[in-house]
Picture 1 (cartoon, rainbow, N blue to C red):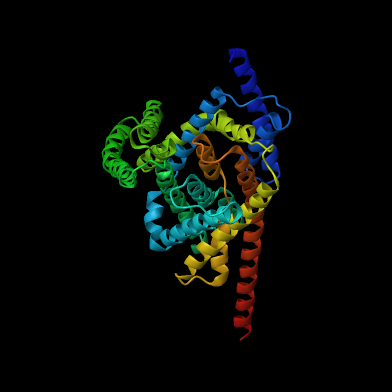
Picture 2 (cartoon, rainbow, N blue to C red):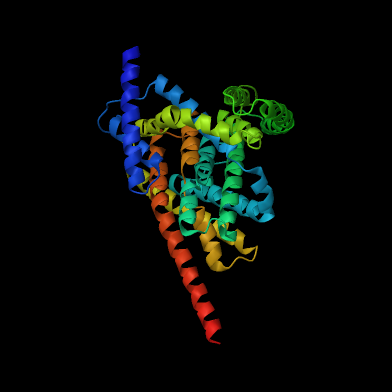
Length: 402
């Protein structure tokens, strides 16, 4: 591909991504929704100004690695410890129910297949897409209502963080077992070995980095060393352990999330990600989305996918919350707060497309889920909190009259 064509494509991608992203934010939707729609408009679906190519694909891969590294850096291990067993169990059930629900949805529409077949793993992968929660919109709504620091708000926040960690681990296992010739024990052993080595080496790397960071705080070499670690972990995960590179990047972020300059590193990484690589990734989703293969069965699947993905979070997280003596209205709040999907769902879908597990037509269902959940979740949360606040005020007035 000629250099000037690359420059033209990048110029179109950046201006359209940012323009559509800002328009989406004005409409109170996530910017990623606008960037995906920009990809649909400028790609083969409509205007065909930019076509998918190797350069865009490689830029998008770097973008997704940086996104996951940033997600790891933003993980608050202290908050995870404070959240305790309740948030952990809510997150576990909140992953299990969508995983099973998504798998059954695919099998009910396209037929049941024997364990170990490509179709079976395709069904499980559809369930994997449903597992991850994007809590960004929920956090903004809770902040706006002054409910983020309440027991329910903190539970949603902590469970969403744990939810993403578990979702990535589940994805790692599914991708490892995808190869029909793979040895179950060998795959499991590789994954466990990677996790153990990450824990042991992570402690050593953390202490070394902390020692260096304390002496050279807020210097440009700190984020450079951090991003080097990110790329090394991403490379080693996929090359030597057969694990997705995004898992390695995510764990690299977790290793450094408690160092003194974690926020500084994240800010520096986000500059490159926000300005350059991330828009290419989200636009590339739109570029790769193919509506030509969307038939009546895919439309049915997409509608079912959205319904199952949203209800499974409400049911799973809501019922798990009830085990910890939350009221039914609070259980609904927690379940509704976990409904939104975003970047991680796209990342998982993109990884499945790259490995040939699913085809590009499934992006339709995922994009629809992100848009619908981004609109519905804030509305439902405001209604639920408004209802409970009204009930609390009425109870207080009744008590005062007595």
